[in-house]
Image (cartoon, rainbow, N blue to C red):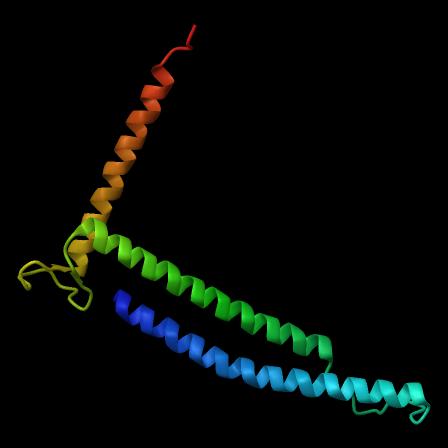
Length: 147
């Protein structure tokens, strides 16, 4: 299991790599579009009677690649935002800072908790909220109709 900080930096590195890839794909898409326009112009003007046997890359394939990388970037940024929001909520409701690099239980710095302790605390909060939800659901089912 990786620490949350490592995941955050991985996501940032991934977005940077995808941005560089997006730039290359955008250049290729623009080049392909220019070739398609040029060939179309030659055909329309009558200068080119038949299409060359060397087929240029298809514009629709290039644009699909462009949108695929854009979708990957969007998903990674959404993940980063969600991760940040979860970290902020964790800090607000937990009250103690988590040491994400500390994976083994044992004595740690005062007023800090290890990552396994954080996970146990989160699990207990989830089970407590499930019990409260179940109690409220049972209570609402036991209430008779209002006359």
